[in-house]
Image (cartoon, rainbow, N blue to C red; front, side, top):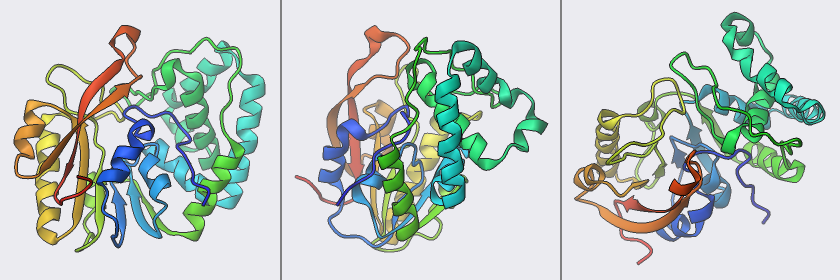
Amino acid sequence: MIKGKPFVKWAGGKRQIIDKLIKYSPVEFNTYFEPFVGGGALLFELSPDKAVINDYNAELINVYECLKDEKKYKKMCSELNKYETLHSEEFYFEIRNLDRDKAKFNKMPDYKRASRTIYLNKACFNGLYRVNSKNEFNVPFNKKTKVNTYDGENLLVIHYLLNFKDIKILNCDFEESIKDAKKNDFIYFDPPYDSDTQTFNSYTENGFDKEEQKRLAKVFKELDNRGCYVMLSNHNTKLVHELYKDYHIHVIQAKRNINANGQKRGKVEEVIITNYESGE
């Protein structure tokens, strides 16, 4: 079976630890839920028959919606072809600044907003998605003279997955997205990570602080009580260990490439937490 892969580079993307995630995933489950879908690495690897995917980032979810809709998908690819031709530093800032005029930006067709999101992700510094307090994309240009915005074969695989499997796409709070989860469903949480020092979590204008980490832990426990299979990724921090001390905590080594300082990129300790025995 041909499997899709992430169509954007996302902070905390799981492509490079996908083998470990598969190792710790349940062998059988009913509906798959991913409340912080991001680039969708595990979603595409599992290719579940039934799923509910969600992200609080509206621009990202708009891309998923356009990938599912045949007409919007084709228009989005056509737009990206134009962007590749017009690509330059001046053009990058022209596209980046479109969200400064909110009234005009909100009237943009869905497929144009989707192509903007993908283009900025490919043309910005280090493939980072970051917004300021006004929800304006503010990542610098990556200085590359050419940009490849998409892999046509991969987008086609994703298009078919979203259409021929029963996949519901949501844009809401993570707690809202799992309200219908039942016994034997599988929920994978990949939230913005906690840190003992400081961490990047500006995927949306609201961020994700320690109080949100605590709320997530309560939701994890709730789902455990419902009889769901629950798995969560995070940094190996004191808070995370305290919040999930009653569950199975698997420490792994992961490589992170998103830091603006190249010297701070490299191997870090992460955890994969499950409420069930797996992969031992």
